[in-house]
Image (cartoon, rainbow, N blue to C red):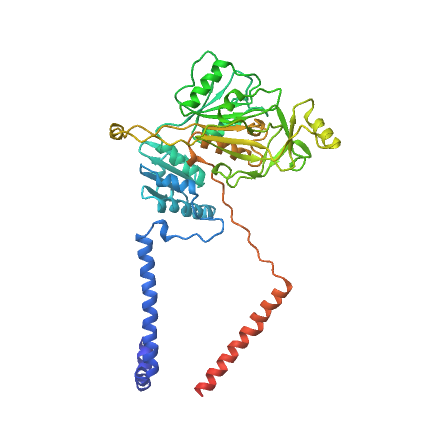
Length: 489
């Protein structure tokens, strides 16, 4: 400091002339403007961070919307009627740094999308009393709670967090019944032909799952959100058919999965809705698994939320699902999964694979049903509700009446333990159940992965980039500097 004072005193005349010069005045004004701009930007950012936390202040510029919540989650958050508290326990060590960053980014998105969601990220080492309060002994953990309900997760995954929010805010879980008594697929069996995996997936997605026998009963239970008939081997009794028709008539939902003969069908029910599964088997010589035409792979889907972004699905020995007669005027039908244009269906006779090979060798059979063929079709009631009377308007506590929904699959193997984990079979089954149970908000949320986007320039482009960066840019700087020097001189 003393040395600085001595220097100022020694050069006071030179410094005085410099501070009074035009150059200093110009530099000072420029500096003031620059600092003012930086200050305004800093203040604006601070205010935006502290006050403006809504989604309108966040922009995800990635192609796959990597840092944005899915439309399903956004819908769930918009419809929240209860407050949600999310508490994340992450130790701030090097091992957990990446996971902590991802969790913070994801949870802040939830908080930004709904004022009912509050997020708290806690260091369990600094606040062991909080970890003890939630009985947390291993990390990381995420606790989602609303009122007295609480769900604990082990990872920051959007699908799990959204389902946890639904679970703690829902009054009761929808009930799914598997019909039994006709040789159907067993939801309790873990064999390759069982549906134990499907059952566990549904239970993890907040469904209550049970089996149902209609023999000797007059009606489907009132608490049934969805009835599943999975691969019946024997025909249903007339009383059972009538009970299911009555259930659909009062706005029920039915998922039918039938296999080619000798397996039975439920056409007595389906024909009322303009659909039928004829006793045929689908052959697809163009797109199939391991060269087996009776093992078609489907890549062509109808436009619907059920099949949005759905990968390839596989069907082992499937019937076609065809439209039959004139469906009711209030019914809408969509063919969801179709085989290739080169596929066809033949009446079931003998060994399926050998019959397909012989048919291909002998030429096109004259009795075949030409593709593309639907193996998954949905139908639903589109009738509008009548205008409520003045007295009905007063009683707003009654929930809106559910409308009939129906899904027909020409194969049950795709949802068994053997194939449900292959391709898009699992998501297709789950999305069908969610749609049928009027739980569209539970449509499977696909995982998002960063895209590996690479630019592969041609030789000409490489030469052009080298010319610009190594020659043109430095030469432009030299020319500009020379011109400035000549002008000032």
